[in-house]
Image (cartoon, rainbow, N blue to C red; front, side):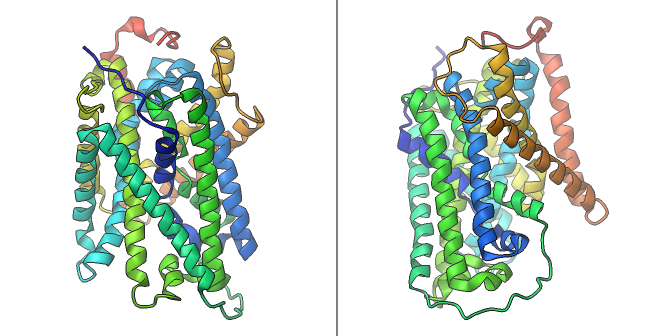
Length: 451
């Protein structure tokens, strides 16, 4: 007998999932370049507020869809209903072979960099892939063991890294004020549009709530609450963190820093500051990776239930309360990508265009489903509709354009990065013939009205 997901995620669990996935290593790696792009201390605060607001606009659209269709699978469910079974399958396929394993690889590479710095500072950077692969394997096993193990790992990691982030703010409060600085030209200044892309990448992950909607208690209220509270909490934490950087280092030193969090803490703890920050970033990256593994397997499970091509993944294990097969296969693919890609940037490039394309398609689905299925009960309707939804759609178009032009611009400099982007595109395109070859013709007639 096929088991269904049980409602075991509280509002706290759901909020921890969102916060834990969003706060990875991106804010620490990108804060200096973002500061360069905006050109002033007040611009730093302004662009992070804008990033949080745009992410909230996107989250509001997902909140309407998740409360109207509180099923496991998130975008897969919405795209299927809005455009047809082929669209849902293509989303699930790309998530399965490109996006989710690639996102996991991004986070474990960030973990590996700081883990080596904290534990094996004399080791070669060429060995980081081993630490990254080990992280994938351990977290995959934890999430395969049971939903309780996965969610409590997420809650603990999210709580610890949030407290660690606040500790940086506390250190800044007792740090000596920086000396007045003269604003000098930077060797490289990213354009404002690129700075915004960096900010939105640091906010990525707010949509993960939709993938576990069927496991949320009282979904009509808690899905919206978790999405809004999670996004606003991350925005506040990011503003506090950047305020700590600016207060401790000053704008010029912050923008020029290569390890901005380490430099901030080292003003008070010069001997142990670097080690403490390395541990904090390790925890942040592991929390994000665990959340991606937890939620990502639910997408493959949802697709496997409905499509013969991925049917082995559509099995829910009643003993563990998890889609064990989907968890294990996802972990295997992520491990292969870690070994094959070899770096944070390559893993990011592997996923970028596909991620923003499906963000766009799902946001448009909010509008499409209002017309296609007007009688479906919507416990929550997007605040500011249609303007908030359309603004977020426009941002997605900008991000798709930027990621594609980046890959094209790299062609003459680094053939490996271009080939990585082409492999991802090839896997995406391969999903369509796979769908048509494995799906009965009668099932292709149009949108899945009653699925």
